[in-house]
Every structure is written in structure tokens, then in C-alpha cells.
Image 1 (cartoon, rainbow, N blue to C red):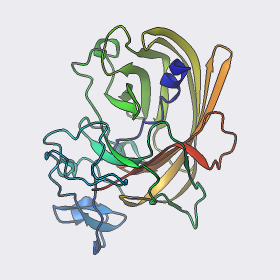
Image 2: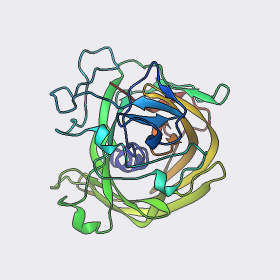
Image 3: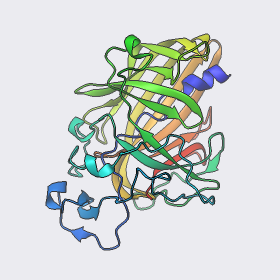
Length: 323
């Protein structure tokens, strides 16, 4: 069962860090912008408002951040790297809030990163997936909530890079496990190529999809839907593993998603996932709230074999956070 878990969450973190900026809240934002160029150099255009960029010293020991949970220190599953700054990424993407996410509005640049508020790994939390007046409000914290930092990493020099020569980047898949998704960004899609452990060795993981999984297809709009499936084989924690996975994607609505970092104009992408491992079939539902240039500002994942699209208990409740 541990092997099944290692593979079955493969898409859940796919869009976690396609972010160009991490923004702080603004009590008196400037008005009337359409792009970042309409704002001062120290601000970015968010939902037609110029909002200042985070100014925390991210090279300090604690990253300059405070925790969302009841604890006194932020819990970073991946430390904020020395010298990392969202300000330096301000010009990597420009968006127009037209309800269509073009390929140019998802940069997938190595080095991009963001903070997320996440429930503890292995826990289940109550969620409300119903939009009120086309607004999903995910601002309220949950018990023992913590912050994690995610970052797109380069395949260059990685122990697995020779087996994935077309990879664009890799990204950690789950806060509770040291495994990475390996991705290729093309002009029309983002593809999942495989899953690897962060370290090689006798208990390493290296799983490859016979046919890459299209986890995003561009442009994305409220009419988007597609299915992608493939056999996945290789080593999972040092043991041979083989399964068939099917992903059914559909954008089911557009609205505003409120997160601890602010409100975003989003498309909600529903992912129906089925893994067949021998005679065992596991299903899961995941909702990704996608904003132009920011990627998944929220991600909510159901329990295994959930049957309701409006499920009320989630195994992952992940939202873009601020200091």
C-alpha cells in the first residue's frame, strides 16, 4: 500500500509553484492597472490593483516569515534558499484576467517558488467547496496548519537527469514524502514524465510513464476538458512497481478564489484520477484553482475513493500564503 501511495499522488503538486511573485496584503492598493508595467517598480498588478511586492529578507535564518499555525516558528519542508527573492521574478509573466490562461501566462521557470498554507501531512480536514456568489473562500486556517516553501528545480546534475533528457524541471510532489515529479513544458502543454526520489540508492524511486501525462493543455478556459492515461513502471522505494493511471480533466467554473495571500481571478480545474494496480483500483478527486501567471493558488484533494464532487473532507488543503 505504501507503493500505491507513492504513485497515486503524482499530479497533486503539479501546479504548486508556477508562481512569478509572492505578494503581501495591501490595505491601500493603487487603482487602475492592467499589467505590471502600469505599476511602480516595487509593485505588481493584481486584479486591476497595484500591490507592493514582499519586502522580507528571505535570506535570513527564518526567511523573514511568520507562521500561520499556532506554533511560533514557520515549518518549511523545503528551506527558503539563500538569495531567493520574489522581487527578482516580477517581470517573468504578464497577465490580463480575461478568463483564458495562455501558455505565456504559465512561465514554468526554474527558481520560481512560493509559500503555501497546508494542513499537516496525513491529516484530514473539513472543507467547503461550494462557491458563494462565485467566490471560494479558503482564507480560514485549519488546526496545526503550517507553511511550506515550494520551488521549481533544474534537472541539471540530478542523479536521474540522464533518464529524462527532455525534462524542463522537477518539483516536490508531497510534503510528507521525498519524491519529485519530473515535467516537460511544451508550447501547448505541461507533461508529467515520471516520479523520482530526491536521492539515489537501494531504496530509490524512479517511475516512468510510457506516454507522458498532459497535466495542463493550453489555452485553458471554461470549455477545456481532456483525458490522459498511461502505464507507469519502475522502482518505488527500491521495489518494482507497475500500474495504469487515468486522469480526466475539466474546467468546471470561473470565479474568485480567496487565499491567505489575497483574492485571485481563477479557473477551477477538476481532476478525476484512477489508478489500477493489479486488482486494486483507487480513485480520487482534486480541484486546482488556477490563476494567470500564478498557477494553482489553491489545491484541494479528496480522500481515496471519494464519490461526491462536493466532498467535505480533504486530505490536502493547500493555499497560497504570505508572510
